[in-house]
Each structure stands twice: as C-alpha cells, then as structure tokens.
Image (tube, rainbow, N blue to C red):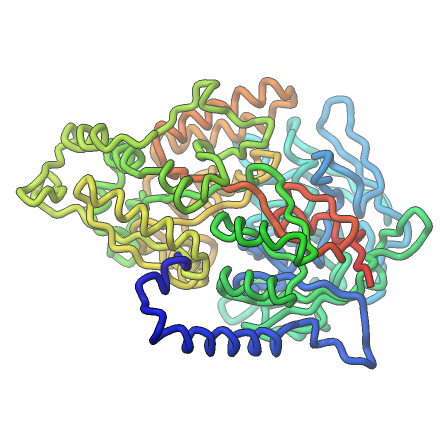
Length: 604
C-alpha cells in the first residue's frame, strides 16, 4: 500500500532526499515517454496504452492470457458489440440458421485480405476449425467451448464456395454463435492457411505438429499474418509492442474511409500498476486502467490533466482463491502433499476458509468501496447471473462459524490457538499470486491475516505471472492461488474452466496433450455434475430454461467452493480527451476502451 511508505520518516532528514528522488523519477519518465518516440520526420497519429507483462505467444490458438496481442490483430467471423451486447457481422457479412437449429451457413465479405495482401476465403475458415481446433494433436483451448453434447463431438464443417461455409451440429448448440466472436481465449479468431498449413503437416522431434511451436514471441513480427485492424510492427521484450495499421483491414466508415483511423498503437510493458499511473500522470500514456487505490488521486486531476474517467459498472471477470483438489500422482509422487490434500478436499475446510475471509474489509479497505462482493462464477452483468437475493449462497464474514465447521470436521486447536488436524499436524499452506498486480498482493496479505485469526498459517508468496501459470498448467504443484478469470455475456465461454477435462479446470487439472500423465486423478460427483449441466445448457435454446440450468451450476459451485470468490471491482479507466469516439463498456480490454479500436480517433 503505497500511501504508507514514508509515513514514519522525519522530514528534516528525508525531505531533500525525497525531492531528489522525485525529480530523478520525472526525468526517467520523460526519457521513457513513448510520445518522444516520434521523430520530426515521421509524425503519425498514435495512442499509447499499457500491459503488465510480456506476451506469451503470437499464435492465437495457444493464447491463455488476457490482455493479449490478438485484441489488436485478430477477428472472428462475428463481433460482440460491447454496448448493445449483440453479436454483429465481422469477417462474415451474414449467417443463416436452419429451422431445426442444427445448421449455420456463414457468408464471408467480398475481397477480404490478410495483412500480407493474400485473399482471406472460406479455405481459411475450414483450416482454422478442421485442421487446428478439431485436430487432436493441437492442444488449443478453443476446443472446449466447441464440444457439442454429452459425447463432446465437434460440429461438421463444409465449404460451399469461396465465401460460404456450413457448420452442421448433431443437436442444437446455443453458444456457437458467441464462440465465433473472436474476442477472448475461448472465442475463435480465423488463422491464415497459406502461412500456417505447412506447420500443421510437418512434425517436430517429439512427433508433434510444428504448429505447436510456430509463431512464438521470438518470431519476427513481420512474419505474423493477421486479419485485424492492426499488425505487429515490432516487439522489444520487457519494453513495448508497437502495432501498425493493417492496410488491408476490411472495415470502412460511412464515408468510405479506410479504418482504423489511428496509424499506430504503442503497448508499453510496465510490470507495476503504480508505475503505469505515474506514466499516465506524466503524459506518457493515453489510457490507464484505474485501481480503487488510485481513483481519488486521478479524479482530482481529471480536468487539469485533460482526461475522462469512465465507469462501466461491475467488471466482467472474477477474482478468487482456489485450492488444489487434484489427488493425482505423477512419476509416483503426489502432486499435493497427502496431508494437505485431505484438508483441501474436505468441504467443511473450504467453507470455513470462505467464512473466515473478511471480504467486506477487502472491499472497504483495498477497493475503497469501489466494487461489489462476488459470489458467482458468472458475471454480475450477465443475464445468466444468479444473485444472492435470488437464493445464491453467500459466505459473509463469520470467523466463529468457521471455527465450528473446522471443529466439526475433526480439526482442533492447541494451547497457542493454532489449528491442528486430527493427527496433530499444524494447518499451514502456501498461497500464491502474481507479484505484478499490487492490488492482488494486498488482497493476499489481507487473506493471510484473516486466516491467522482462525489459527491457519498462510505462507503468502507473490511470484511472477509466468511462473504461476506454469505451475497451474504444467507442473501442477501448488497449494492455493489467488488470481482471476476474464468473463463475458455467455457462460459457455467458461466451458474450459468447468468441463472436468477443460484446459483451465485448474482446481483439478487434467494433463494437457504432450504432458506427463497422472495416476489417480479423481473427479468429484459435484464436479462432474457441473460439467453435465454446462453441456445441457448448451443444448437449450430457450433463454429462460438456459438461465435455470446455469442457476443450478452457480448453486453447486457456491456450495462446494472450487473457487472462493472475493470482490468484483467497478470497471474504471482514465482516457485522454484527445482520444475520440470512445464507447466505454465493462466488456473489453482496458475496461472497455479497446473493443471499438478501429473507430477511435486522435485529436491533433
């Protein structure tokens, strides 16, 4: 918490030093200001934004992070309008759905092109779905949201002509149209056949398609072929990514002018949210997401700084802690210490932890009251959300109830008020989060304090995001983590989280293709039921009936707590007034300022 850094220092000794540090920082920020990258000979329209870390891949099929470069570079057959929440045409100018709801025919726009000038046709759509997504040798998260029915089969796809593609389903599949919007790691962006087909057909030393290692972040950006409004011009690790206007992008405005309007976007890689705010205040950034701790400061500077703070309401996304429930063994060794595994898989233990966390204190103290308590995996602004008023179970702060649950489950307290299990082992585990996110680090510290009050010792360990992701998706050796998932309107976007074999089923992760197998992994009955309900909801086209199915999934998750949900912040961002045509929404990167990036303008 930055406001307390200098609280106890004496002014006579420290004040000159503070001034020296302040002016040094100002010189540093000015020197690194991206505005200064423009030379007199090459003045172009641009705006500058920021992200916390380096991209993990330039291959959309393997993206598991948010934000990502594909928000600038990729499009799907359709697009989700963040204001109306309606699905609109994108690469496909139209689509027709059969009366029995089992067939959809998409018609592509005329004369679509890739960023290298090559035609974009139905062959690229067929390639993306059949050769990549439906390919059992390609481990992409795009698979899970496209599996239809209890057998998890993929739709059939057929080329009608160069502009028309037909999808045929064994049964009605409600989420499919949303899956074509290309806006998240679970929605599909079309990839270029002419650039990637060879990598599908060739194998590496492990017998995997070369595609698996194609278009990593070490690839020359000029070789990355895209269909979105921008292409990657350059990438300097730990510093920045520069996006340049795609001259072959299909959109035009009402007067026939080529979009996007802005020539260049600079994506600064700044690993500290505090540093991002400093850069914004010094004029180095045009857009910055606002955390609750920075809201009051920036609100006071809004008029003088010539920027506007936008509020899109509760964010689309969740923040939570989760215990490792995986009972599997790898190479003869349990993923989780068996003693800890017994705690984590004890429902009373998870519920006690939920009651012991003072979420209202987190909301009041860390979020400054700028948010709402989160109680569901489905976003508050989604039409499928089940609220506590509608009967969703909540875990309001109640340490006494937590203690009773633990005692009833066989735990006990020693003379030092430390929690012990039935065998006399001290209850102690490691909680991890990504160190780059200062708000999450503060939340982790608060959770550590809350759980100490019921006798649990938490070893809180903030680590680099890339290291944390590797533990969650590859090594699977972790106790408890604090992170978040992005969200959206359509619950099936989270199918890869809730299907037991899903790529982001992190609390009980199945190994992905090419990884060492697990022995003894178990899927709990409630866990399997959630997966079946997600499959059932996808089959139901009646919105009211779909909502009731998703209501049941929310009841089960809150009863069994694979994730203990915390606080949902409001969507706040500060945007320079020089950026025009902003249509702010809780949907989309940078709190919704980028979903319509193609029509943003920059005033001189």
